[in-house]
Image (tube, rainbow, N blue to C red; front, side, top):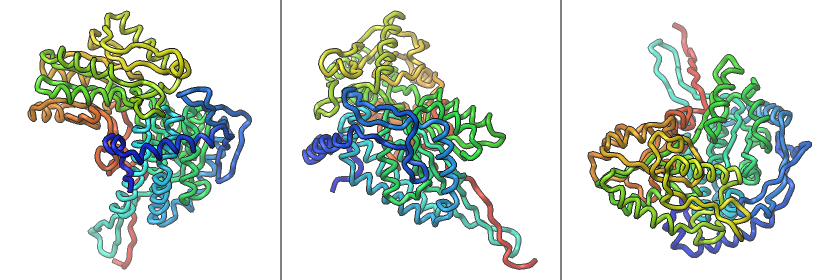
Length: 525
């Protein structure tokens, strides 16, 4: 039986997996082009205006037509979520666990179909699309396990007073807005939705307009698993009107968001400003992830780890490696090996087995790529590899670009500090490990970081001094990427996150509940 945790090794060696995925590519096409409603309180709702979603592989592929839900739809969905809250939160927590486990099973049963959808909608290769579905399955099951181990967050306490029975109970807040990004349209959305639903909250779910079909399908799977009407609601459309409503609405108890730093900080700021009490915001806000390569490193391992982490999904991951600092004595050797490896990357149609990564998500991303290249060259940077927008044939349809390595920019250059979300890797050098750590930490962000070193003392120093929430040493499979539920809790420090609790970790669910101390007096005294 195929495990939910997909790896590059198992995928590349199992022909059955490739056959099932390729059959799913044909099957999923049959659902393209349909018109999809909003779902509020279990009802299908249409809006005054609609928008089309098209594949980044080829914009000629119409994935579907979706509703532009505005402020009115957001308010209706919030009302439905609040109406459903007493019943959903009042259920035995074991019932909610059973429902979420069923949702995980449904996702696993449709893993190839969902992976094919992710390929069409986000442009991911089969390897990364299948891995994402596997991550979603394991995420849901892990959270169920944590909730069970914690007895639904009900703990007996001890009172010094006679005749008192005391317990601590973690209670849900109410209705949550869940806002998901394009780069993990199934895994990140499912994780945030589950964090809210499992703990007894209700949800108004708004997927990004770049990948709305994944959001519709995910909504349907949660409903099929047994989530009550109104306990989950779906609103598609632009983020601005939706965000304006949820930050100010008194009946929105919390917000879960994964996306850009600018939007996340706006949500944090406005949600506090609009209401006198604290509205929790669970936000993951990207990063500018560094890797340190010391003179003791295995260069071949370091190059492979950096390439996988920098260019997987075209660098469109908040965990992607975007800065590498190499000790000067091995810099020339590392750069030469990196150039050779990057030049072997296959860019093209992500439906093809041999392709390493496909298109960027849209023309805005391509423009970001082009402007960054121009700026780097203008300011004295040197292209080691890539730097081109591909044209002609399939390349002329989507935003296809070459993976890029740039050296020669000063360490304080803007491109070393700003998250770009495109396949551009900046490379600098250092003399001592202390200098390398100083450079790595010289950012507002702090999500992931990595080191390649064969010296245990250097690795210990790195772990002790790096300012990031998820850190790796000598990870050939991805220098800063590839966190897995139950293995590497995924959460950022500084500007990369708002809670200090990582998704897929033992403390994540605590962000969706608040403590109530309950005391029952059982005898007179």
